Image 1 (cartoon, rainbow, N blue to C red):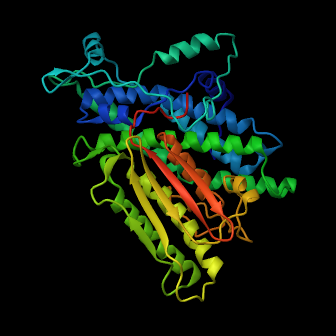
Image 2 (image 1 turned 90 degrees about the vertical axis):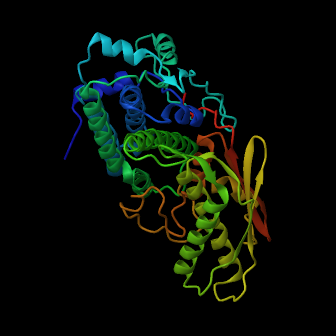
Image 3 (image 1 turned 120 degrees about the vertical axis):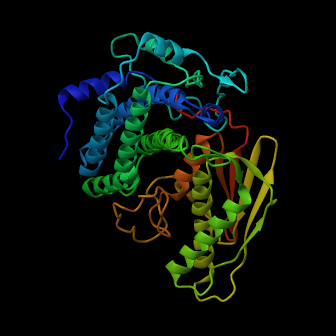
Length: 438
């Protein structure tokens, strides 16, 4: 069983004193279009500095939780995963480069015959209060301000000058770096459920019914950071693969022409299937979709399908439980998609009886569920990030809201008790807002 050494923990504390650097969707796309060996190497350099900072913050967070939560076996296991991933990135041997290659890597590339544009700046994320998901900066040795300035100067990579060949060491390092990231991504597949398991252990040990606001805001920060880490890792792995095979409309895992209607139809089909399976229905409640066929925008299709699937699943469950599983004809749930200049908004309206106004804040609380018995958590449950039971886990809505906020959108809920609920999913189509991490 791997355990971190005291020396490694010392290094982690040092890295955790630096703030993370937020990146926008547009920056990722501008950078990643047609990546070459030099450009990918620049990306690897950025990530080999950025990921250890983000991982170190999480190791520290997990070790400083209140009320004995840090002592729970599952929480300790997750903390070890983050520390091990940190160690793997910082100990990966780097190639030794000549001064000439170093200078060339620092020169911006040329695109379409002219010099490449410097990447656009990120803007403040409109759905998030400043500092809401901040990586805590500790000024342990009194120079926290200087460190914050140093990080501000560290920009997301720009395409490198790609005329001529690069030395083979660069390509070799790129491949080794991508392989290490794949290993880390696999290791962290079960983080959401293992942390949830740790909270169940803590609730049982401390005889707690609900989690308090300190733990709630820790989980918000922790899961938001996890989305960011997996986004950067997934994007880099996909870019490395795309040097061999180019997918039209895809830059890494970002689709520049994400078709909202196609993803909504797939999410509807999946949610209805899970509903039929869970309740043993011949046919689950119908869902009507109102959406233009050619509505495309730049987004991560995996994030969008996850949010739609989770919210639809909640709506269908409410409808079946409100009207009874033996009913032949359920009221139709409506999904309406509207296109604005800033946002694409998706409204999901059900007739599932609504939620009492006093319970609405609880909907955003982790581990809050209206199901009598929380199912036991299978450690393989989130191997693909998104697979979910019909209900009872209490994570669907809070995590979906984090996915929406990650790229400047939001998820809101309005209920009419005795009738039904409307969920509004706002997706920011300007794609320039920074990850909520600085």
